[in-house]
Length: 166
Image (cartoon, rainbow, N blue to C red; front, side):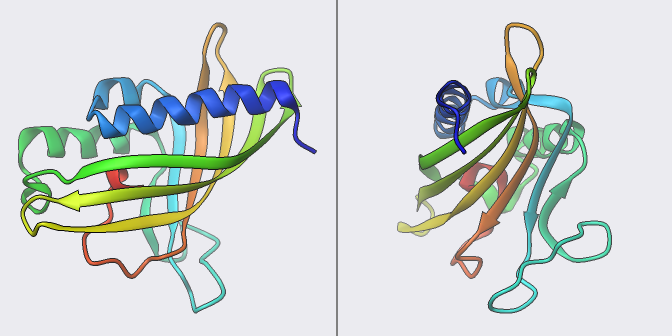
């Protein structure tokens, strides 16, 4: 059952994350993640089952710590990721946010999401959508993401999938 306080914390964090991604404020986005955070986008094994183990099965994206996210951001910032030039414009939406305390300093949350993406190079737009599953931990005055699983529902998209389009 969802807890109103936990839901408010998760909602605020997800709204902030979407804004950071849309404004390309990569430093602020990275600060939302605990250094040990796991960021995982499982692949689809078949039309109804997603992969369940990033160590033994294929994933769309998998980082076992924030360091992997930092490296990806560095490649985007440096221009070494030519497939992302120019960067697409995005608008992120989250809804149906449910959250509950698992402990005083730990929240489990889930939400529906959609990202609208416009590629200025091709002048085309598309959307990605799915479900987020999150674990949040209190670090004193702040809550950080310690695990984020992104269940992408439309994995056959006309562009590359990257952190800023999810």
